[in-house]
Image (cartoon, one colour):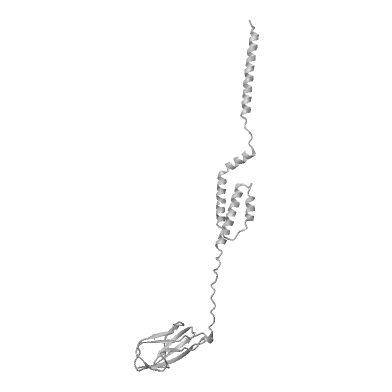
Length: 229
């Protein structure tokens, strides 16, 4: 039969074994749950995700500026090199500095837009007045009466269609009356009008008529007369 000392010794040895096993298990657990160090890329992603609100605001501002720049298409090209350099320099700045530069860019863009809007529209091409070819004065002659013939003493009473020949005038005046010294200008006619109707006239009366050829070279005229029956 085993002695009490041997039994107590075995019990102490068992207890020590249990303690050792529990301690090792806890150490192993601690080793497995230890946090893995974050990589630089993960840290950058964390910072970007933490600033979503700021990024959203900046995106809105940039989209607004991009839209406003888009409206400048078709207008004079503006050198934005200095603005691009300043935008590139924004990398690494804090949010307050970024907001300040954004406000500055917006203000400068507003000035550019206002200046372009105030640019006057080029005047339309002026209308060129055609040069009028001078009339060849050598072709302008005195009017020649066709009907009624001058000196006719037996014109039948009634309406008369006065007629004359073309004398290359720019227009004609028809004068008519019973007193050659005080004829009345009855009508001013175009260059193509070579006749003029007159209503009923009196019987047994002397009448006088004159055609004035209007011309830049100087007006010319001829007077004729006739007598009704």
